[in-house]
Amino acid sequence: YSLNKGNNISLSIKTAINYSEGNNLLEIYCEDLGNNIGQGSVSFTIDTIAPSQISDLKVNALLRENALSLVWSPIKNDSISKYNLYSSTAPFTDVSGLIPIASTGSSSFKDINLISKAAYYYAVTGVDIAANENKNVNSVKATVADTIAPVVSILSPVSNFYKTKPTNQPTNKQITLV
View 1 (cartoon, rainbow, N blue to C red):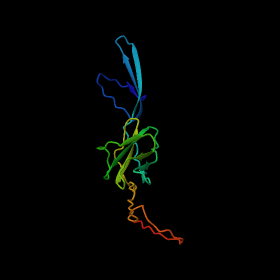
View 2 (view 1 turned 90 degrees about the vertical axis):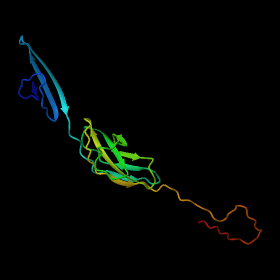
View 3 (view 1 turned 45 degrees about the vertical axis):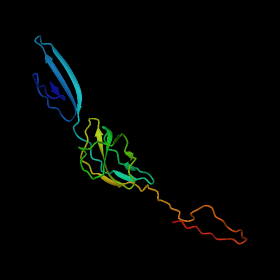
């Protein structure tokens, strides 16, 4: 056989072939007892390197929404197939034991149905077409906006029926809202 146009190497059944990271070409030659030679080849890619870490994740509260907006710069690697998003209520530096809350092909995401004024931690990882993912992350903290409306209590007037005497003089009525 020949790997990546290297020297021909003899092999027997169950011979391990050492390959290289990246694109590879394996050519197999076979000769029978009648000196007939057969040949076959296959190209394949070996990718065991995880994409680089996302270092510029920004998480922002959205006014009057129980949601947070996540934005990051895309990884400059044409083999990225998706981004995995992770969330927790505590900081984390490794996503090995976590399940992604979502996956996306873009470099932004809106996490919805969150709790008003609650703090969340997020991290985003790039996943390449060979399913490599950098599991080491730096989580980013954000707090959801206050979306709870204030309670309004009207203490006076207590009734909407009033008896007043007709008068020709203008009156100044005062209503107190507390």
